Length: 420
Ligand SMILES: *Cc1c(COP(=O)(O)O)cnc(C)c1O
Image (cartoon, rainbow, N blue to C red; front, side, top):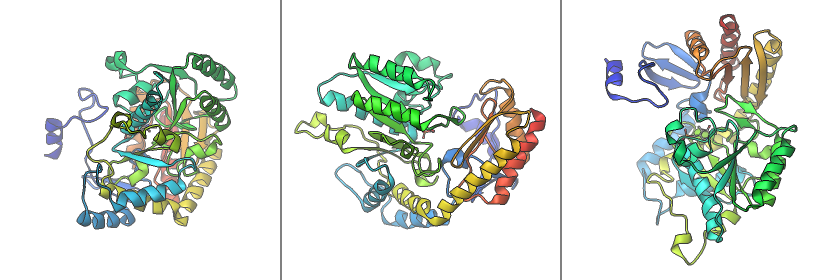
């Protein structure tokens, strides 16, 4: 039996196998639906961790990938270049915030962050200054490789590694009450001239259960950081590509980041790929007659042509009027749903940004406490895949979801009020 072999051979991510040995076998995915081995269907209410935003196995993407696969599968990206990467770069830079100039490829969100941090550290190093500390936000999440883990605050399970982290100074997610104090902290630290970078998830902190903060306050922090020659790094791995209502969350601020990290829905879920983009100022700090001032970071699968073609097809979809209209419709539906439930006694708080909707239940529980498992099972039994965290449940469904399918998610959430 397949599942016996799963237990025998596989080690799943983020899993305590002694407590949670069972995994559901998903056989097929199409549009917004996941199908298990018994043909039960589940609406993918989180677009498989915000990747498959244009629907699973979208033929507009798969056809381009199929074509690319027979032409050029992979080639070394050092010394060689290829059309899929060039096309993707040209098209992506058209919609990225206007100060972005260069793209650097890697494989996943975590590596895009490690690359951003290394770019920032070496930027200062190449200018002959040693800056070692990094500012990051409370409750931030940036991934599971060492650099990314260091700047993540949601590291309850990262204890075994914490002695080996980079030095990070934390400030709260910005709002009008705390921004003055955070500015004072940054200014004070900057006097010692050893702050290399400020890493943040703009506006929405995904893994912190879709916590949201104020663009205006964040903008103030960014301006201060820039003024102090601190490299600003926007982690848009989750927020990128339309989910916040704009193509990139950084567009909500007038002060633009030096570096932007992208992954998750970059390829529409077809293949792993990440991009760290930067402005000319960063890039030029690596130009030199000395080899060692170059950026000696590289992954074997950098700019994989098939992934590039998936990303290019995804970008075309994002720009289409169909997807742009869907985004507006989903935003409006979420607002209507919010009106209906926000005053319910079981609801403590709701929040929305673009197509992201989150609801906190009126109970105190741990992030991975018993409630999330009860809710998870409850939603699955109703044919809806959601991943509650602590007392929060959120929706981030593919852009192609229909009103009827959205309503099924809302109904499942409303029905779950009974088990709180
Ligand atoms: C998921 C995520 C990451 C890590 O990406 P991986 O591809 O899982 O390594 C980093 N930052 C944010 C904001 C994320 O949501």
